[in-house]
Length: 354
Image (cartoon, rainbow, N blue to C red; front, side):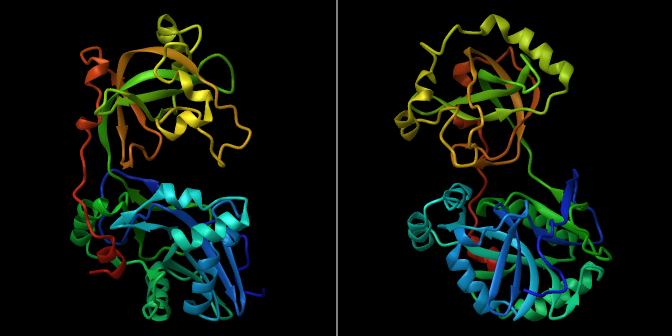
């Protein structure tokens, strides 16, 4: 492979802002695996955000990229899996599997798509120092004819359209809008763009915590919601506390500490089969590797309010943000029914720009 931009390149990133800024290019924020694709003739490299290759996990995409991309190019985009009328991140994570037979099976059962949103090189020319507006023009010129599963990400410079996308596209599994300054060159590994994400709040039961790597203070709070059957399901974590606050939380929660998980709603968390019928902390994951997933059980008696962006199935998609304790709420009142459900939106309309 001999391209003007060679792997590995770390993608340009975005920083969070509260509102959609005016005077920029706007795109939907895709919820998948960020990937930079390098094609030189018959060679294709799919680089992840960490620089590791993703090609072996998505053989069907390698075939499609060879068919739909220019002979020599470097394209930034997102690998996603479409399930029904929306994106499905859980199905996407299942594709990272060590067994080739499993990878091949899933490539047929849950094929992936690639959504392209930037062009870093074309032919013998690097576009890293070219402004965003002209890179977009070049990307449209070479990828407008692309066929599924390779897609050109819809983009607009109309801030009113961007606001409409922000409200409507969430029902298709997207999680916000990205704003890119029109004069912006491509700057790898810098937060030069802007992302605007949905944020909501929910009241959740604090049913345990993991200790911080620095010692016996709170690393993350384990959160639960009661389902329709009255079962407390583990739905995510709350983290990112200052060190002083971590120690304060450990002291606040000490009266709720249980000597063991016996009698706790998540007592069966060490049993692999239990995770098949309930959502429990410490579930097996190919992402966690040898990471210590043990946790300290608490009597599920305390409620906190957390901020979250959106749900992935029956769990919080990302780490939530602690807002406040809710002594006025009972644990039994913390159910899925309180969560706002976005209006469904056909993902096919997003991908085709309709």
